[in-house]
Image 1 (cartoon, one colour):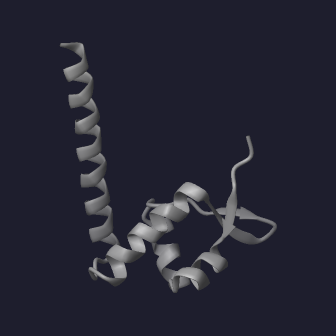
Image 2 (cartoon, rainbow, N blue to C red; image 1 turned 120 degrees about the horizontal axis):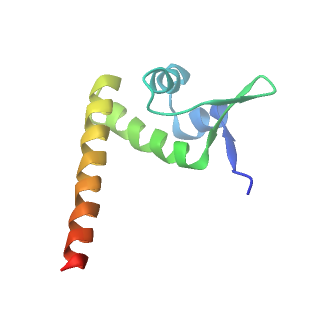
Length: 91
């Protein structure tokens, strides 16, 4: 199954996001940029992350390191919630 790709330049224009912000997210391992034919793309799931991270950055004024911490905490909470649901089902 082929994944839908979105051009980074279009994402930046549509969401009023700086290109350097996308690059910082990539450099810190928060998103993965795919390069095809000398253009940068993001998969659909990555676009959702960029939209969430841009809200945190521009509205809450979190820097990329803060975004990374918050994202890791949210991932851990979701993992613990899955574990708890699994344990409740075992009863």
